[in-house]
Length: 432
Image (cartoon, rainbow, N blue to C red; front, side):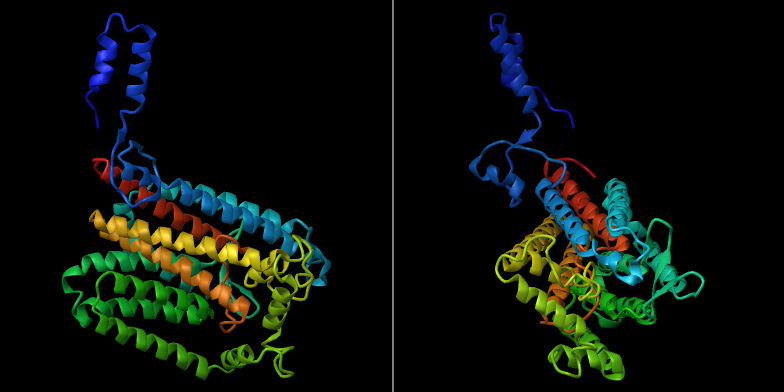
């Protein structure tokens, strides 16, 4: 949007005796032409409360650097937790840097994908959301086919793609957030009617749930259920319908646990992991996770000095990464990590509310759905590692080893930054 030159700039150019001081004044006026005094709640615009000029930034740079810091921290911890794995006969053919290199490749692929995702306007994501969900369903079906999906430890969740093993359940977390946000925008006028507003969404959620439980992956099902229900609630569905569907989902999860012997064993092992019956069985991971936290005490045993990662704690680089952090960096490191995730989720919710205030309802609900996804999954990972929740295999967002998780996490953050970019453009008088 073009701007008329300011009075100061015109005077500096027209004054015949201004000399270099006039040209200096013109240059300064020109460089601040894109600044407007605005009043916003964003941290980047906080100075506007004191009536000072604020330069428009393309997106929230603080948010970006916090995510970069988590990625770097995760890279260090993945290397620390996997460097001794080739000493295990199971991984004897691997190099000590094998998992580090794989994680770096995943970060590179995810960064490129995130840069491409940032270029896509939010209205395009809204248009594509039903098709993306349909594609996710196809992939969830494909992963169950023996010659397509890869089976690991009795679970068929991955599709080999050469550079990485793609996990469709990670894609389902993003596409269900997109579909639910678009669905609420389309159904806004009937959001008070159960059969027209909520029931179709429950059918889509049920279809994804059945496919995920066939893998089986109950953890991913729990995450997408929280995302979908959270967006319905934030989108304005009545509290009566929300609690009705929530109670139904809780009943489904309880029935799944009761009807599955190995899920029941996990719950009982969580209640008393150090018992003779569970210490070497379903409670084995939890007991060694708690031992890791106990060894870490306040400040940890030092980076790289963990004992539990030396073939005692299974999946230390994925589902139990926090235990290695607690052992090596202590309570201080764990509290710092919790604080970073708390700030991150809070900032995402702020961006979502800002989008809704600017009448970008789809963008706002999608961003808040991503906040629920990251926050809930981090909460489950932390709770499981600390023994506050039953053992469930969920990675720590941005940090645990896993190509699909890193890929979808960074794409999600790119979408959030795109929404923030469009918010700033609207607040500065631009058009989408």
